[in-house]
Length: 179
Ligand SMILES: NC(=O)c1ccc[n+]([C@@H]2O[C@H](COP(=O)([O-])OP(=O)(O)OC[C@H]3O[C@@H](n4cnc5c(N)ncnc54)[C@H](O)[C@@H]3O)[C@@H](O)[C@H]2O)c1
Image (tube, rainbow, N blue to C red):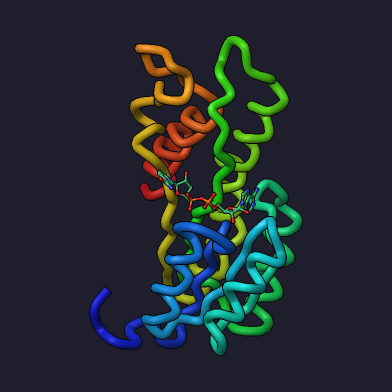
């Protein structure tokens, strides 16, 4: 990003923006002039980051796995600031959760948040983007989504744990959505 205030008037929604990369992305978009919707499953963390940004920012609790919450947050954003023009699907649950010995319900929770959550986000914002004349969706993934990871398991061969499998799902899904 280079031009100052190049995103002035644009509304950007970042998930998992209460910490880490999402927080940094929220700051970067805000510095470019965007109005930033700081969302996180941890409401307090989202509120702290929104306060750091100051004006042109709002905080909302959003569990990306919950389609109803997506509808509510996008609707509130629309009423307060206008349609979301950039969505950053950043939030992810990380747990290696191995395939043979791992807990199946833990796998479900990871896939629900990391894969279905991305789908919820796309479905929630695309109608508003279409009406507004366009927008951008950024799906955060990981090289672990294509290679797997072995470091946390101590195995020589990569194990397709829950989180790495979910990242792979988003790689494929993002490719399909962009066509
Ligand atoms: N940090 C890395 O080295 C790294 C490497 C590759 C990919 N990534 C990807 O970057 C993204 C951010 O990673 P990070 O390291 O900044 O994470 P982080 O753990 O620092 O922050 C994740 C944030 O997401 C929130 N969150 C967790 N579950 C959520 C849910 N269901 N709904 C909404 N929010 C939820 C957490 O509360 C937290 O604030 C993830 O998609 C991750 O897979 C990170």
